[in-house]
Image (cartoon, rainbow, N blue to C red; front, side):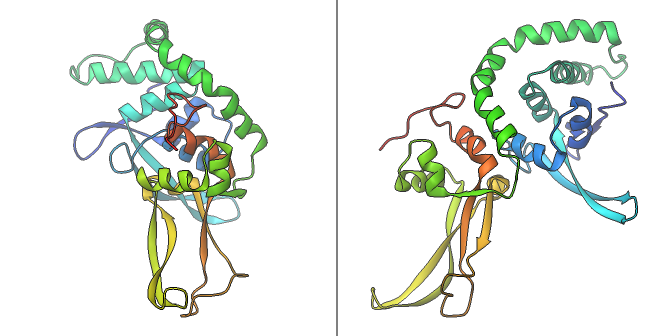
Length: 260
């Protein structure tokens, strides 16, 4: 197992693991490029919980192509393993816990298969509460994974809010208030209604949540006075539950009501 999920150290001395190596060990059905953003949406932060890296790999008949990987802290790797809700996830989490213990004693050997099996049993006992919370969200997660397979499908922020019982103002106020999206001034132009030059704003996602959104040009809409094409921010359809979960809306683990 140590060969399949090698432990490295970050520049600040923390233990870390490759996201692709963990994905391979967990035997996840989804492609890595789709799976990792879904994991990040559980509340992890770039620069704190993971770092994005790129390398080039050989592809048959295509020369070399750029491939993205992520260096996960051991804490993130443990939580991601637990989220999988399967035997592989429990094994990985138990292994990471043991690696943390043994980091204080470098001469100690890593566990053999028998010791690892015992660690898995103990880890299952400790993870009961977290597993129950995730099980409550399983039907919604399964629905999105099975029936919203096209990562190109999008919905408006207003429609996303309606799915979760929010009005249009509530949806935008929630996402802007919790630093998920923000209004960006893209140009200034004269407004006949206001009788003066005003900012023209569009919504953009903060970097931690950009994988949940899609920014699309509106070629059929009138352009701004400077000729710039208007752009609209959409929620990726497959990310609707993940975004709601990150906002802790009713129907998600730890969900809470949103004030009117």
